[in-house]
Structure formats: structure tokens, C-alpha cells
Length: 451
Ligand code: FAD
Image (cartoon, rainbow, N blue to C red; front, top):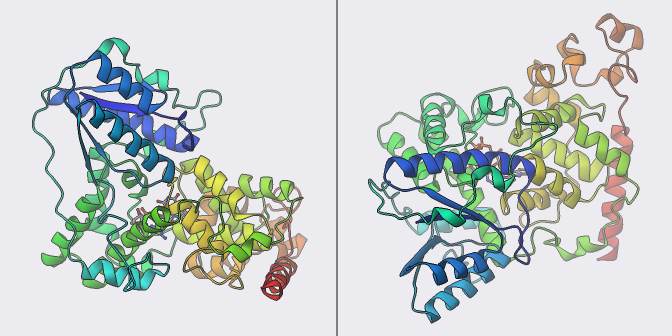
């Protein structure tokens, strides 16, 4: 029998974000359909996983339990406890690695410790050889399904109700193995050509958007890795683009390596000196303006609205909005991480906190704190014709390119000609760029003095 337990009750587990739940709902539905085609079905339950498995073991005649290994601290503890309990009553337990190319503990520095810097981690990953090939899907499952205690999918309450903010998402996402395979095929046929350079431009189609599919296991990193290798060997993608892409996939491995070795990464500064950082306690209104895409900085607002409208945000823009929150607004990175966790379909227990800590300057191999992204320069460089901003901030769509990333620098009479009145049709900037940057650098200097 194939069993999925939605466990939001066991100690230490973080409930899934709302957008992830939407994705999960459709992923479970499609898994059940796929299992149905080969003789099985998905048995759904909700509650503490250890208690539910204990109950099933007591009531059914089960000789072996199989699962994929997990990396988080609470998950590891639950799985270890369960394994011991099952083995003590004579049930065979088999666990597998299905989510990562290599076990997070096998990649080690020369002195046997964990990596804290990405480049040597990557070199070590490559030196350890090619990851295993993906396994083929089973052609048949011999299963019996004790349907009586199972829950219908809707009982898991994964979908938003009032309001249904995910209306229309099914046109953007197809959360199924088929959807993942189609996305991968489309990417290697089109988007990957020019990936190395194009991946930084939010209105170009040079990214795979595979992250939520990887997050929920609808495609495995082995399939992605070997799929890319296959195209490399056939000369249908350039080595430059494929290497860059695999290096990005390896950032995901690096995040999980960090999560495994530093399990508190989701809430504790990787660099302890940041524990004293003077994050603003009075930033609530600014946090809300950031969340709603109403900061008065077009590239920031476009990113935050893309996130709200689609459950996804382009990586370049994630960096710019993240930097703006922790630097210009001096708001604790954990607030940003929390919002992303709730709103991203790819909200990931390793990638999300590791990336936020990287942006805030307190993480492993982090961007230095004094690197403050300038939203206007980022906009002009990576969205030079303003297409990304026009798509998500339609109230600015009539502005010509030279004004679109800094409407606040334009005379009000001129703005009016394009239908824009700051403070009325679009907000004034919630913080002055130079003041915000200087305040952040000042706070950082104080931290250094305290070292
Ligand atoms: P592609 O460019 O097509 O890359 C392919 C795969 O490589 C991705 O699907 C992803 O698994 C991995 N990858 C790519 N870039 C990164 C990266 N910088 N770090 C780690 N892995 C990477 N990624 C998540 O999967 N979940 C998150 O919750 C998440 N939160 C983030 C928060 C912030 C503040 C930032 C700056 C980045 C975050 N990222 C997160 C990393 C990155 O933005 C996404 O993985 C990427 O945008 C996904 O789009 P894609 O699949 O088209 O990526």
C-alpha cells in the first residue's frame, strides 16, 4: 500500500506554506491517478506519522515499510524513532535517498567536516563521481488498500477557500510527473540555450521553473542531472549552459548539506555575530508594503506581485527584493523567509532559509552585508525595456523605458502624461534609497565594532 501522511502535529515539524499546499494537493491527486493505472492507489492520512504507522502496523499484516530519507532535524528524529520501533516488532525497514544527488554527509572537507563555502563543495561533488542513474517507474504495483480509514483528498484541507487566491494557477502549473517531464523537455529544447547569461533576466524564458517539481518529488534531481548529461553528450546543449545549470542544481545540494549539518538554519543566524544585529522592531507597515508590492520601487513591487499572483518569483528578483527587505528596510530576514515560505509553491526547507541568510549576509558563503542591491540599477540592467515591471505593475505600463524603474525621479507633470500620480495611482517610495542604504551600512559598522 502507498501511504501519504500529512503530518503537521509531530513536534518540531513546520506546517507547509499555503502555496505549497496548493501544489501538494494536485501532486497527490496525480500520484493517486498514476498509481491507479498500475494497480494501486494512494492511502491518505493526517496526523502524527509515528502514531498512524503504528496503528496501521497493528491492524494490518505488514512485513516491510519503505520510505525516502529526510534531512531536517525533527524529520530525522521521527524517522529514526519509527525505524527502531518497527524493527523491534519485526517489521523490515528500508530507507532510500530520493531527493538529493548525494547523501548530505558523504561530501566532506579534507578535515572531514562540513563545507561552508560553495565552490569547494561543488568541486568535491564533481570529484565524487556521477550521481546514480534514476530508477525506472514500476510497471505494476501489487497492493491492497485498506480504504476504510483513509481520508479523501479534500479532507486534508490543502486548497484555499475564501478567497481562492490560487484561481488560475492550474493554467500556470501542472503539478504532476507529466507536468514536470513536459517542463524539463521544453527547457532543454528552448530555455537552456543561453541559460548562463539569460537566467538573470526575469522577462526571458531562460529558466526551467522546475523548483516546485523538485520540491515535491515530481521529478528527481537524478532525472534532471542525467537528462542534462544526455543532451550534453548528444551536443544538443552547450557545455557552458549545461555546466552553469548543473552548478545551480548543486546549490540545492549545498543548501541541504547546510540543513543537515546546521539544523537550526531556518531560524538561527549561521554567523552568530548577527544575533546582535539591530533589526527594526517598528517595521510592520513597511513589511506589509513589501508583501503587497507597494514599496514605490517598481522592480521590487513587480517581484512581490509576481510571487502573489503565480506562487513563484524569478531568482534575480528574489535577490533584489530580499536585499531590499533586510537592508533598505532593516527588517529581520526571518520575516522575509516566513512570507516566502507561505507564498512560494517551491517554498523549501533548505533552499529558502539558506538563500535568505545568504542575502542577509549572515549565512554560509554569504553575500557580504555591505553589498546592497540598488533597485534602480538592477531594474535598468536586468529589465532594461521594463517588460517585467509592465507585466506585474500595470499602473506604470505607459511609462517609457527611461522612467520605468525610477518614477520618483520624474517631474509630476511629466508622470501625469503617462497616467501616473505618485501617492495616488502608485506609491511614493517607502524609504529613500540613499538613506536606506546608508542606514544599513551604519548598522553593519556597529556590528563590526562589537566583534
Ligand atoms: P533554474 O535556474 O532553472 O535552476 C534549476 C534548479 O536549480 C532549481 O529548480 C533549483 O532547485 C536549483 N537552484 C537554482 N538556483 C538556486 C539557488 N540560488 N539556490 C539553490 N538552488 C537553486 N529555491 C527553492 O527551490 N525554494 C525556495 O524556497 C527558495 N527560496 C529562495 C529565497 C531567496 C531569498 C532567494 C534569493 C532564492 C531562493 N531560492 C529558492 C533559490 C532560487 O531562487 C530558486 O531555486 C530558483 O529561482 C528556482 O527557479 P528555477 O527552477 O527556474 O531555477
